[in-house]
Image 1 (cartoon, rainbow, N blue to C red):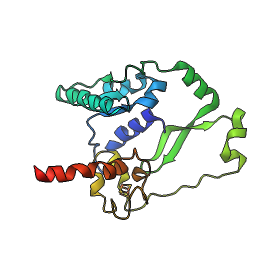
Image 2: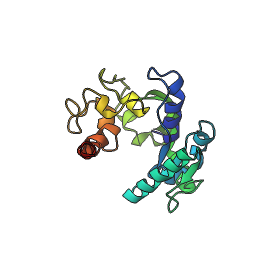
Image 3: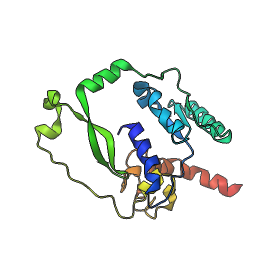
Image 4: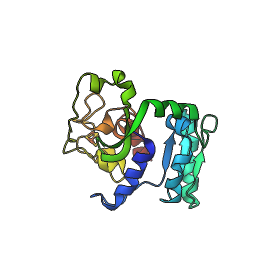
Length: 208
Ligand code: SF4
């Protein structure tokens, strides 16, 4: 998924979302994506939506510093794109990598994602010049829409208006070993991360 399209969809959908406005104060820009695309594509989110963005590396200290930078922006009512991962990310990104991606892939005008629904300009497809490498074409695979489980709250969680523990399936029917929704599939998903780490703080909170 193309990160700027995903952020734009989450923010833009707030007006029409059944869950109401998004409850997101700012965004951590993913370091690996940002190495390629640079920090420039995030600028509209700060300028037009007034949402701070901090691009972060993946080491624990990178993320902690990025969160601190975000908190400072929120506390000071600033909305800027800041780059915590300066050792790898520039404003323009890696132009050679961008060119290589552009040579091989073209933009899809829309694509359906689990948890987010159909998002315009959010995915790539292999160009016909490289069709021999495209499994969907080689094996004649047709697209089939798969609806999300009716009890899954991923859409609301991705918009910040529900927490993983608000989902009645969290940690019971839905676990990383047996995921039901997209937020539990990858270890980076909000539900999977909360399942692995978020629960650790609950006993500490209870002690205080
Ligand atoms: S716990 Fe599972 S079913 Fe519930 S919102 Fe998360 S991914 Fe969806």
